[in-house]
Length: 127
Image (tube, rainbow, N blue to C red; front, side):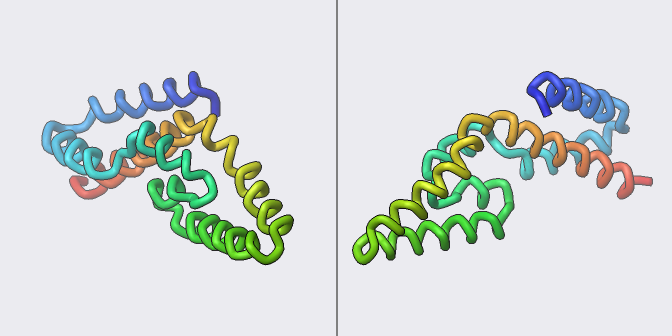
């Protein structure tokens, strides 16, 4: 999804939030403060590309563990089979590098999904 589409989607979600009752809005913003993620934090964690810390930040534990394990395997191979270790580590960088450049969009999409889920949750709790 493009940045413009994400902004349009966020604006539509903000309009839905404005339509909530005052009590629902209060609950929504309380929950939002706990769940919305900061794009800058994601970007900083993404600089540790091989460790996959940015996946853990957005709650994608499985992918984070896979990244971490592959990185550790690559590091273990470095002293014994340096070429294999380097190939593994370079492979991780190649797979993860695009996320570094798209970090703003990735977190924006994540936050839009959180907003959508929270709106639904608040509406269903107070229905």
